[in-house]
Length: 277
Ligand SMILES: Nc1ncnc2c1ncn2[C@@H]1O[C@H](COP(=O)(O)OP(=O)(O)OP(=O)(O)O)[C@@H](O)[C@H]1O
Image 1: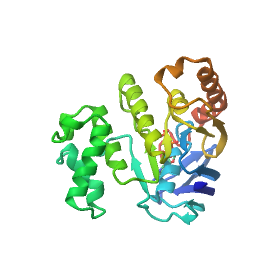
Image 2 (image 1 turned 90 degrees about the vertical axis):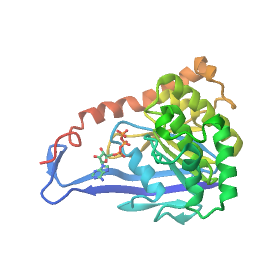
Image 3 (image 1 turned 120 degrees about the vertical axis):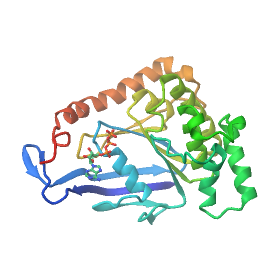
Image 4 (image 1 turned 180 degrees about the vertical axis):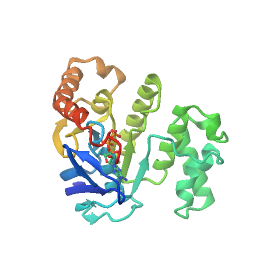
């Protein structure tokens, strides 16, 4: 069953009056980031989205989340047009986005609070998800008293308390050290195996993309389109050691092969990097 369907999605940003950038040597005041992208994500699937910097991965996630509108085309959840943030979806950002004045428990409770859940239900669920992430003894700590990895666990726990049908994750582990990142990938997979919610996960790491996904969606350089979708037919549940297998290496090589030209193209695309005039 299809859960998210993006059809012919384009996004053009209009710059402020008086501002312009050089795109392919031509001065313009509009930047087209996505240009007719089609993507279908099935129910319960773990999708990772990779692509060069500036290919519109975050913009696509924002469109799916209902945070920004497509200039053309549309995105739908279960056939319904997405026009605003939808309670069926939760978003986890790279920066932990926790409230510094709330404890870990209160941060996790927040998502249920805004949905009007009662205090007992909130407490129970928040504790449950903190426990799942091994944060049982840390409920009363404030974000500043937690490591980066723990803060991101709290952010993911908060997203999961609402039982989202779709979990959108934008480079959630990018700010973490390599070991913590590996551990969190394993934890996320373990939890996902249980709840089997649909996940759309943006990453720059090919290794992470292959390890987590059912399918890796590789995007072209800006303007972004789906270049290729690579099926990751590695068995589940996946242990960290799967990364050392020949099958994993072949898939990692395959994704890189698809991306290499696009990354080169993106590096030549000075337009977005150049200062606005
Ligand atoms: N609000 C905005 N106004 C103007 N341009 C924007 C805006 N938001 C995004 N962009 C442009 O869209 C391009 C694509 O952004 P996006 O963050 O989706 O890329 P990305 O693929 O996620 O890149 P990265 O991997 O570096 O995070 C950016 O380079 C930026 O120039």
